[in-house]
Image (cartoon, rainbow, N blue to C red; front, side, top):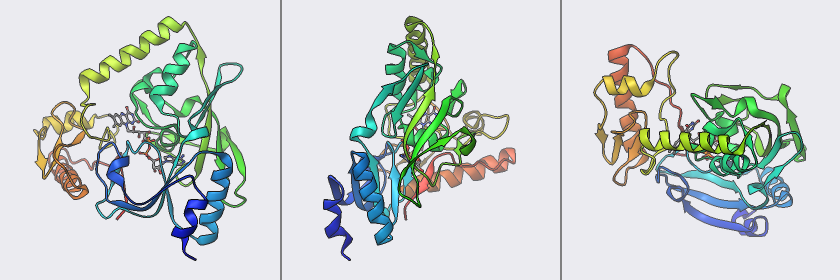
Length: 298
Ligand SMILES: Cc1cc2nc3c(=O)[nH]c(=O)nc-3n(C[C@H](O)[C@H](O)[C@H](O)COP(=O)(O)OP(=O)(O)OC[C@H]3O[C@@H](n4cnc5c(N)ncnc54)[C@H](O)[C@@H]3O)c2cc1C
């Protein structure tokens, strides 16, 4: 079967040999064999039926804000949920349903405008709902996990829509058991409050981020997870590694746990810098740093 010839009838947006640097906030990454956008539930069912039948590998892409895609790119089909999956519905009792493709800054501000809070600290996480659930995105002031009531997925066996309830999912620090699932939407339980107060907190979180993070550079947020009881950024700074470079990649001067693509960095540059920093931190503190960003592709 020539899957490349069949794909355009299955998904409305299809691109072949698509550079992944166009789809990651790092602006790094070789080509995906194919990139598709899925806009409706019917298209999603059709697509997953197709890849199952053809035994094709696929990769679910959110905003690409936590991904380092290797220079050889991604084999198989990269899938992004847009259209219907970018909608937010406001339900009863302070519940909100958001599609997998909704971005957190949009979700948090739309909720705030309606006097719904509890999620304010997530306003500066640039990713989508799908990526935020997989990563249990969060800050020192709160994570998405505790707000989740249920998650809509496509069941991998039946290819039918299914809702996961709290007993089905688990969240811990930048981790969940959702990695292999196809997430379509989430239902969150928020808190009612004064719109003015909630918006004030949202702006405060935005302001703090502007001050402390290099948000106008190409990066993927925190490179490493914080080891128990310590802050990686502080350790990297104490080790004198701020501003360290490998090729086009650099340890940020503003926030040492952010690595920047300063000058056309390759994934190889970033990975070399990661290893150098890990080795220096091991030497100095005896701590093995674990990656928070996900490295994918070949
Ligand atoms: C400037 C900046 C600041 C950041 N600050 C924070 C922060 O404060 N806290 C924090 O936690 N993170 C932060 N991040 C990292 C990143 O935004 C989060 O990890 C975010 O949750 C990733 O979402 P995404 O949509 O970009 O996912 P992607 O990076 O595209 O993908 C991440 C993972 O989710 C999977 N995935 C994506 N969509 C789906 C889906 N629909 N179904 C199933 N799996 C899916 C992917 O396959 C991949 O495994 C920051 C990043 C940047 C660039």
